[in-house]
Length: 203
Ligand SMILES: [Zn+2]
Ligand SMILES: [Zn+2]
Image (cartoon, rainbow, N blue to C red; front, side):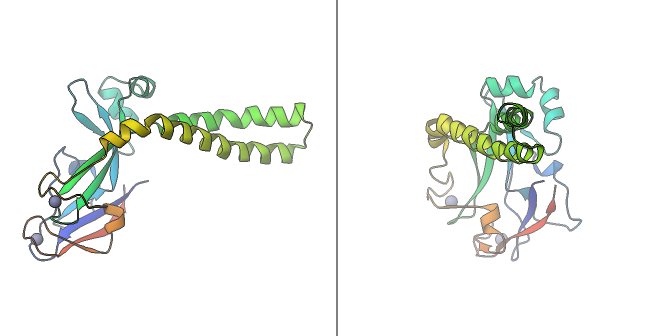
């Protein structure tokens, strides 16, 4: 359940501009103005290099509509986590894309529950309660190992994909939407420190 935010300038009433048609699928809190955004989203890279957002909670059906399954998309390294970054100097909204493969971790953790239970109960001779508890703990361990594996695997390409400087002003200091919540930011339209980022709900 991603949190969504409203970003709007108190002085000129505008919000940062987003391409990608992302704003269309995010539920609004009913008020007018500004831009409603999550702090990031999952995206699929197409053959021509275009990134298609996979809006929550319809990730799987959007993916199917584009002709992919989760497995294929993951195997072909097409899944990305896109994080919005706001330039601290000019307020420009940029996107940082990083390889993302969290589903493997969830899947491995899920499979490990019955396996660890059987192992602890029948091989190690633990009680059912202890086996269940052990299985529960093992999911965390496996999830951690898989996350570490993914992190190592993607560390280099992700470092290269990191946003290095603002395409508008060339500065290299960014903040994320969730970190900016409640604080005043530079407005990219009127260049005053009046852009505000507030929680608008969950999508
Ligand atoms: Zn900038
Ligand atoms: Zn403004």
